[in-house]
Amino acid sequence: MPDKPRILVIEDDPPIRKFLRISLESNGFDMSEAATGEQGLRAAAAEPPDAVILDLGLPDLDGLEVIRRLREWTTVPTIVLSARGREADKIAALDGGADDYLTKPFGVGELLARLRVALRNAARSTSDEAPVFEVGGLRVDLAARRVIVDAAEVHLTPTEYRLLTTLIRHAGKVVTHRQLLKEVWGPHSVEENQYLRVYLGQLRRKIERDATRPRYLRTEPGVGYRLKDE
Image (cartoon, rainbow, N blue to C red):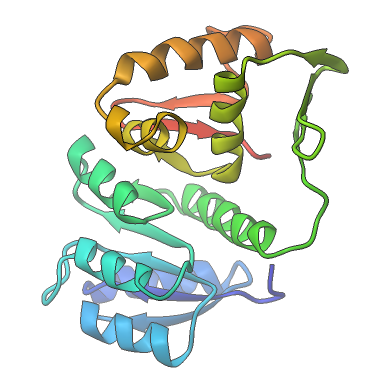
């Protein structure tokens, strides 16, 4: 992670931009800002940020279009900050390439935590670290294909392992039902939510101390799942 990450805020509401600037700069971030989608896209191209915070309700472009255009040329972590709280809006943004989604009004602490996760994920994806994922008592050696829970090896089926490694690739992020189904079972299975429920339940029973109170595999109701990464 950069010593002082630069965050591009694309938001048309001046008081929210001012509030974000105070919050971000007092917590060790630099901030640049844009009031429209087009301005934000130009700013991102001219001086690529370390992360983007994006409102969906912009005066010129819908935020989903901004995400789509960003994803044509960059994988910069993008967190949506929007008054749109419907599950369908969250799913559309996440499926479109957003890394996370917060609904206004929001807590600064939660936004900063989500931002740190997004930046860590970006750093992890470009680093040369050994292919080992570890959080709490869960350790997954991706090279050896070994899963250790609380010092004991756990045996997963091929599908359970593929589901877990897909979540690891997106650790800390919300992964939608549709995205998981597509990556694990293929594009022909994106409507087969029962596959996901069954295998996610099996996976939880194997890696969680209590599958009804999961430590690692968190449910984002109506949207998808998030694998804890800290």
